[in-house]
Image 1 (cartoon, helix red, strand yellow):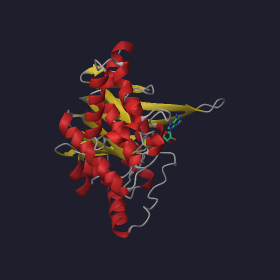
Image 2 (cartoon, helix red, strand yellow):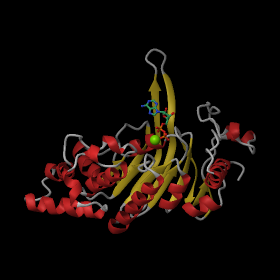
Image 3 (cartoon, helix red, strand yellow):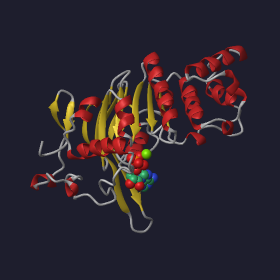
Image 4 (cartoon, protein in one colour):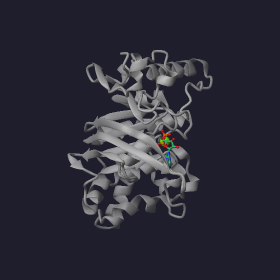
Length: 310
Ligand SMILES: Nc1ncnc2c1ncn2[C@@H]1O[C@H](COP(=O)(O)OP(=O)(O)O)[C@@H](O)[C@H]1O
Ligand SMILES: [Mg+2]
């Protein structure tokens, strides 16, 4: 469904003295129809930048992205419009998703109206009600305004609105991280139900390893703009190979048991070694080989690790 090849994104900061900052560095990944790839990594590692670059919401610095075989960076504006309908993104902050002056009904009907997807008002209303039902909400919500609804209800409505366009690929960028834990579980279930029903592919992004583990068929662990480990989600979780993944798994396991704050494991603001493995400065295993960037290599079927000492 989606194939990302050697994608990079460099930001340029500063007006007089230009500084370059590589937020996404040579990332490749594939997502099959109906599959969920979870992307996990701490805040600032480049997850959102990767997501936005894949959807061409921001321009890439290098690499290619194919959606069902079509290179989206080479697509004409018209082609891109068609592809965009099939590729949707859900952001972290539900409160900005809807026009505060529109009733929910109109917000849900708007994308269909713009595309003339329904013949008349009656059909429109049927479609809106059916969308609502699929995300576990009721007709009474339709006459409300966004501020009258909870964060969890809004995220369901965001999903309902996206579904009206019959998407094939959804990027969910920390969709539940602003929600209470109990509400989070319900919303995650709806994501799953909808995927089963329509065979949608997800790129599911979270800094929360538990959420990613629960949602994903496969997961990719990102550190400072690079994928350091990827494989079947449960295998990566149970048997992490990269020293950074091990640290992440341990941090989450102890967090769950003790209810303590996750320790500040590593300082992501530090500059990486020029040209080398970015984790090396914090790594017990690091040696001279780490001055070169390690490639991902396959350690078990479908399980890849970027470390010289594996
Ligand atoms: N528009 C921008 N200009 C410059 N730097 C940015 C911009 N957006 C994000 N960054 C930087 O890129 C890095 C990755 O950010 P982001 O993709 O938001 O990470 P994440 O989603 O994993 O928290 C961060 O260091 C962030 O400060
Ligand atoms: Mg982010």
